[in-house]
Length: 184
Image 1: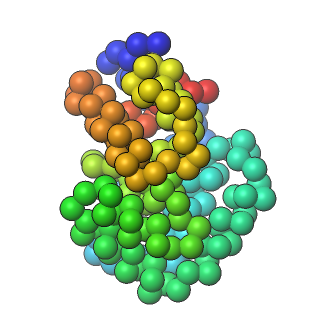
Image 2: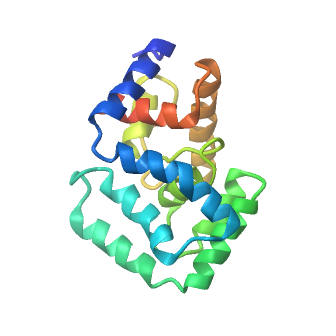
């Protein structure tokens, strides 16, 4: 498969039309970044990101693992969650943002990448096996999905996504939606 602008645009449009979580994702991308930046959010807002990461697979993710991660996230002291998110908001790069977030229980690099996307969707995009595999199938990445990826592997993935966004004059949210649909 070769990425083209029309392929990315059509797949992102198909995502909007077919993915059941699109409306809530779009709304959350409009509101959560400002809430995270200002600190005006609650525990449920932060937990929503963890739930979203797993539930976007619509049952294709093992239910017991999803529930375990969601429950473990709730064990974090809320001040620790707020501190980690504030540090990620203020981070100068992806590695620093990921490092602050992965200090939290149940937050590995993929879940941290979801937080980063909802902190700043212009700079970050979530990583997971579907998106990674799509890039690999297009010869944009050279190896299979590392489960979970390291911070440096996420940075490599992020560079490729940013390159696609630049190449096709679109945002990272469009790239994500296209990668997700192409992996289906």
